[in-house]
Figure (cartoon, one colour):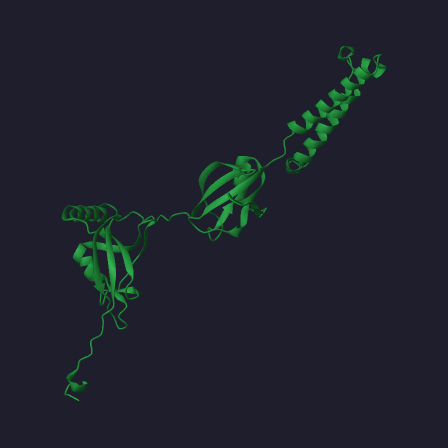
Length: 283
C-alpha cells in the first residue's frame, strides 16, 4: 500500500453527479443548453448563484415548455446552492428574470427617494389577490352558455357563491358536470349565506350544469290547449250544440266554469312559487 492509502498506487475515480439545464429568458428560448455538476454534502444541489451571475438573472423559476413558468427556485444565501434537491442525469428547465439595467435602477432609486420625501405621513396600503375560480356553465347539459371567473368567499376564501349563480341565471339547482360523462352530484350550499358546502382551490376550473326553474307559461298553456281540444271534440261529435257550450258566450258578461278553473289553477301555482316571498312580507 502506498503513502496515499491506495493499493499498488491505483487511484479510484468517482463520477460527479450532473444535470442537463435548458435556460429560458422570460419564456423565450432556450437561450442555452449545458450540463452542470451538482454540489452540496449529498451532491444533489444546483449551483444556483453561479447560474444567476452567468446569465445576469435576478431570479429563476421552474419552467415547462407546455404550461409555462412554475414556482420560484430559492437558494441558500450562504453557499449559493438550491434548497431543492435534484437527481443525477435529470433534465431541468429554468426560466429567468433579467436584472434591471442601470437606467431602470436609477429610475427606481429616484422613485423611492420621491416616495420617502412625499409620503412619510401617508399610510401604506397592502393589496391582496382575491382567490377566484373559472366556471364553465351549462344548462341541462347544453353549452357552455357562459364562461366567467367568480371570486371565492367565506372565512378561508374557498367557498363558491352558489346563490348568486342561481339568481343570475334563473336556476333552481346546479350540479357538478363533466362534458364527457354528464351531470354528477348536486352542489349544495348553506341557506344562510348562499355559499357552497364544499371548498374549492384558487385557480380551479369548474364545470357546472344548471337546472332551470319551472315556467308558469308551459303548464297553463297545456291546460288551455287541453280544454280547447276537448271542447272542439265534443262539439264535433254531438250534432246539436249542448246547452253548456252555449253558455260559453262572453257577451253575456258572465264567466264560464272552465275559465274559473284555469284561474284557480294559475293562482295555486303562483302561490306555491311565491310562498317564500309572501312570508317575508308577513302574509
